Length: 58
Ligand SMILES: [Zn+2]
Image 1 (tube, rainbow, N blue to C red):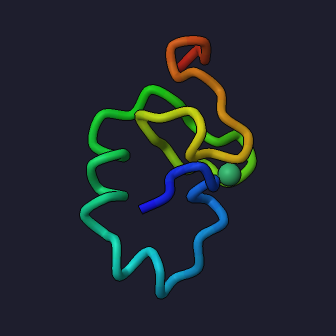
Image 2: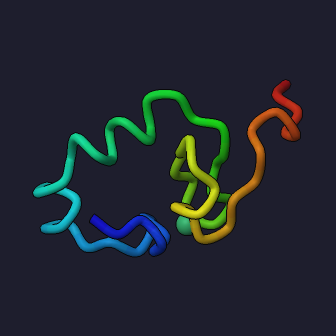
């Protein structure tokens, strides 16, 4: 499958059909989307990626 589209933008049906792919990306997140708060191991799957280790957690 293509992974050049931000997965923030996939529709519900697509996500349901490819859940294992999304689960794999979300299992070890390195990035979080600051627009929709989704997490992923791959930067290009998020529309506004921010590296998790750059974010201060209080
Ligand atoms: Zn997003």
